[in-house]
Every structure is written in structure tokens, then in C-alpha cells.
Length: 247
Image 1: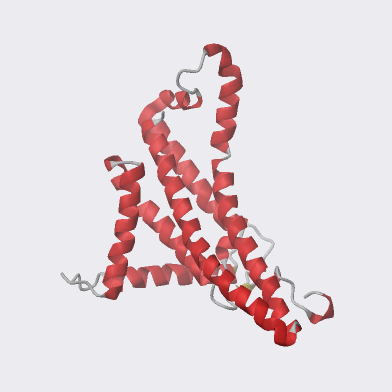
Image 2: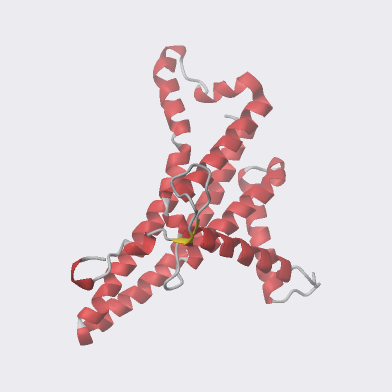
């Protein structure tokens, strides 16, 4: 709470315990928070959407079945374009990541809800999981030849001492860039909406101006919520493609 009774724009990102752990300081204890609750809600909504949408499997699909099929075809097409036929086996993980991030972003647009993708610990956990899995995949497929990935094709040997450290740093920065991109966009967008919304009541009759801006920014935030899920999914596809084909 800021001075004068005003709420801080960052207050919406505060993690609050719903069912606190008995010993919060002890390692291994669980604390069910508002972030945990929104993740559970996201999983339940995704599961219900897909199960109910594909329950009948009608030849002429209804609205929900059409949306379910559209989401499936969207990710399947994305994998086909970036990875190729070899990427089909990785469809479940990419589809799960896309839907989880997308629904999490959209849930954050609901007033008085919580955006768990606005926390770096959540986005980094997703990113490091992708990074670790892709690295294991590459080593399992190529063995020691995987390390040739850090040597640009056609580069003269004399340049290797300079290029290899750059390539290694670039590779290790993948989970950081992947997580910060999602976290920063959601954090900045929601903070901006909160700040501008605060002017609506203060400006009286002229509050219509910030109100119109909030409406426009809300539409932009919904678009960004989808784009960030898409970017996370397509970068995951590109990382898998690198792991399968190296250069």
C-alpha cells in the first residue's frame, strides 16, 4: 500500500499464501499460493476445453470442437514448418507449453486475478526445462559431435578461440532470454494498465480519456498475451530443430 491510501501498481504481482505451510522456513514444505491456484485453474480450464471440445468428435464440428481442432492444427503446423516431420513426436510438450502460457496470460487479464507468467521464477522454470530437455536430446542424438554446434560452419581455425566462447555464451543465455521476454512483457503491460487506470477516478469528467486508453491497451495486452505464448512455442521448436540437426 502506497502513501495516501493509494495502491501500488506492483501490488497486483504480490504472491499471497492461501493455505500456508506449517513451517514456511523449512526446506521441502509446500505453500499453496494465489500463483499456485491460478496454475491449477489454467490446467483445469485447458483440460476441460480439450476434453469437452473433442468429446463428440462430430464430422461437422461445433464451436468448441472447431477451436480445439484449430489450436491443434496451429501447433502442428508450427512444428512442421520449423522442425519438420521429425518434430511430430515433440508435439505434446510444445502444445502443452503453448496452451499453459496462453491461458495463464489470458487469466491475468481478468480483473482482480493473478498473472503467474509475470513472475520470473515461473517463466524461468519453464525455460530451463526446455533448455535442459533440448540439450539432453542433442547429446543423446549426436553424442560428442554435439559440441561442433559451437563451431560456426566454415569458420577458420584461427577464429575458433574467439567464436567458440561467443557461441557457448549465446547458447547458455537461451533460458534467460526465453524467460525474461515473457516475464518482462507481462509485467510491463499489466503495470502500465494499472497506472493509467489510476487516473480514471482522479481526473473526474476527464477520466474518459484514460478509460479509452485502458480499453485500447487491454486489447493490445490480449494480443501480446497470444504473441508471447506463440514466441515461446516457436523458439522451443527452433531449439529442438537445432538439437536434431545441429547446423
